[in-house]
Image (cartoon, rainbow, N blue to C red; front, side, top):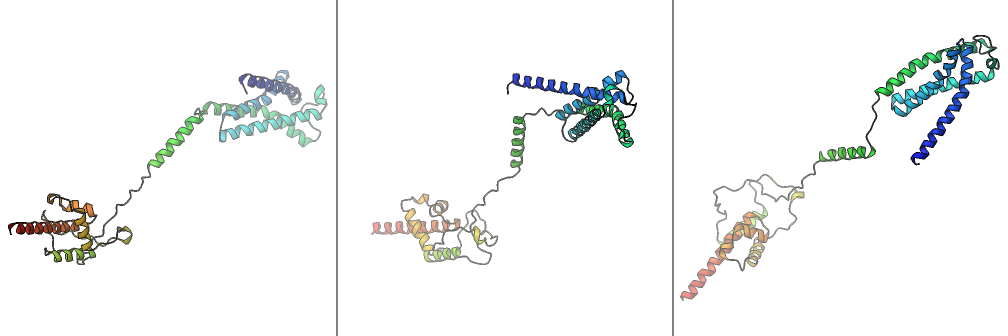
Length: 290
C-alpha cells in the first residue's frame, strides 16, 4: 500500500474511533453524574476512561517484553470497565434523564456497591497506570537496527565462532623404525646386500653421529602401504635408474628419491653402485694395458 492509501486508512480509523468515543462519552458522563460528579467532572470523565485506553494502545505498539504485557493488561482492563459502564447505562433508563437516586446504579445492593466502586476507582487508576505507561515509554530504547544490519551481525558472530575451530592438520606418513635390539626386514636385507658386495655391514657416518635410536614400533595404521622390496630388487632398480648417471651424481639422497626408499638403503645402494663402477673401470684399464 502506498503512502496515500495508508493516510486514508489512518483518517478513516480516527473517524471511527472519534464516533465511538462520542457514543461512549454520553454513557460515561451520565454514570459520572450518578456517582456524584459535577458538570465539569462528568464532562471530563469519559476522557479519563477511554483516553487511557488510547494511551495504553499506543504504549502497546512501542513497548516490548514485560512492559508490553503490562500495557495490554491496562488496555484490556479499562476496555472491560468501559463496556460494563456502557452496559449499565443501557439497562437503567433513569440515568438518561438524571432522575436516578444519587449513588444508585442497580437495585441489588451488592451489585450497586460494585458498580459505584468501579466508576469511582477508574479516575484514580488512570492517574497511576497512565503515569506508569508514560514513564515506561520514555525510558524505552527503540531498536533502530535494520534487518540487514541484524543479518550482518549474525553472520559476523557465526564467522567468529567458526574461527575458533581449527582444522586438524593431517598426519604425515610415518615410516617404520626398527626396535632397539631387534633387526627389521629392511636392516637384514641391507646387511645381506653388503655381505654380498664385500662391504662393511655398518655404513660409515660422514658427520660422525652414531646410529639413530628407535622410538619404538609404529602402529600398523600409520605404516606405508608400499610392499617391502628385497635387496636384490632395490639394487637392480637402482642400476636401471642410474645407468646414464655420472659418478658424481651418485649420491645417497638422489638414489633414495629415485627408487623411493629409506636413507639407509640410499647410502647402501650408493656404495654398491660406486663399487661396481670402480670395478668396471679397473677391468677396463686392465684390458687396455694388456
